Length: 445
Ligand code: LLP
Image (cartoon, rainbow, N blue to C red; front, side, top):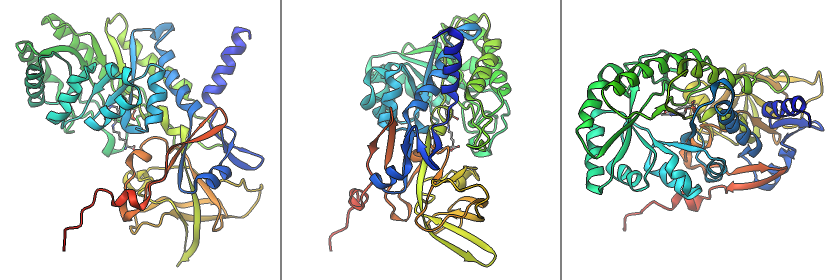
């Protein structure tokens, strides 16, 4: 293929959405959602392997050539979607991982053991067993979030006879416009260490032989759409790195965190979100401030890689009227996807059967069966006039969907299906009631 045509084809595939109507019915990369509901029941999470890989490669290639080229490792944020099959897929493509618990460390080990050496460990409350497990696994970097944690890390490394590579996660006091629950880069947030105090702490760390001050890290929040705040935070980190190098520290890593946002309002019919452009802008903004800086760049994207690759397939149970309001009640609830309840997050919702032009619509709250008024996916949403038994698809649910599920109301978690090369495969089965009762103990008598 000529170069220009190849570039065009790859640009198209990188922006092609996995969920599309074919013969008036929704498909995921060629697999009909009707057939998936038939095979696996509802609710079910459905993911496109193609899009997960493409999104990861967008980040990878952005820093592999051209002006933004530099040594880098893309450490996928496991918390966004921690399914073993997805971790393996990314690990095999060379991804590193950003973890926040000993549990996530075990997931990486199970999914793709060689990737342990590309793990960065973040989180404000690391426990001894978690630190020990990560030290024994010889992970790449601990992102340390307090002075007390640093001394704990030093003593555990000493006890185990190893040296711990660490970065202080600094709090740059940069504002990023996102939901207050997922903004992290201001001084009043619990995350990181005040950047003005960091230099003194690195000096103290230098005296501890079990510590290797190897980097500086920053993460300002999640679902950040404009790239300016990322550059602003990086500028502050770079000035700290310059000071640290003057102090004789061998700083090799700059971890710029995750947080790049997607467009949850983008619709299938009128799509204008261009992920390739977004990653390009992000890489350009970072590389502009990183010009001439010699450091291995670490990034921790989560949502951007998996959110739009996944959707939650559900069936309408009832349509009911209360006063002036109409409610579409689905078999998926807030325990299956909590983002709307927790962050008033917007998710597009589509009927699996495509309505004819001009077909009647309804305006309703799309809700689940859970006994909370906060159990909704959308409020006052206009959509096709769905009936009980119809399938609907909640879009952009691949990130912080399954990983935030619970068993609230004693509801089994949904299964997950991964579509690869036009074929679907279960990567997690539906929980059974037996699974739910497993850990419980009934006192005798
Ligand atoms: N690195 C660190 C240290 C983080 O705390 C996070 C996310 C990430 C990376 C990945 O951020 P991402 O690229 O996915 O934005 N449950 C919320 C999002 C919570 C984000 C927590 N930290 C939601 O559903 O919107």
